[in-house]
Length: 211
Image (cartoon, rainbow, N blue to C red; front, side, top):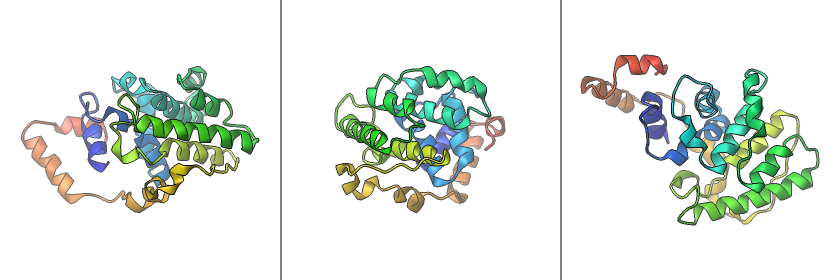
């Protein structure tokens, strides 16, 4: 995931691998506590950055769901994002969660989350599923953890349903904090330096995106 982040960060306009992972880094970094990285990609997929090509990451219901969640969390700072809240994700489960994000009916929200988790598993295990290429997240419902976290920021406690997906150690939110590190990667910085020497990226690329 760190490699995916750096590849995207250095050349987002031409980065094309693992398309279904990029938008999932928004909730990953948010839960891991790196708000800057989460906001960098969130503003991009919501179309309010100066980087082109964000539409490709909104081709799936999960991508639209995450964009809507980031918009909800940041609409006070970016009023233009309110239009994102009116867009359908194309998925009844995710649309229901967005519509009821301010609901105090925990049982209602819990049932909707259960349905979204079922969808997450189906999407991960079918040839045309949205998560089929997102191996790091196929049993980690990071978009649901993000939803619960945003509700928590709104002062709404949410009970995670007793769903079979939570029987896997890979589905634990603790996995994020256990594997995430915001420290510098000396080897990666050497690789970036080498890429500059080969003209694969330029100093202006790095400056433009704050690397």
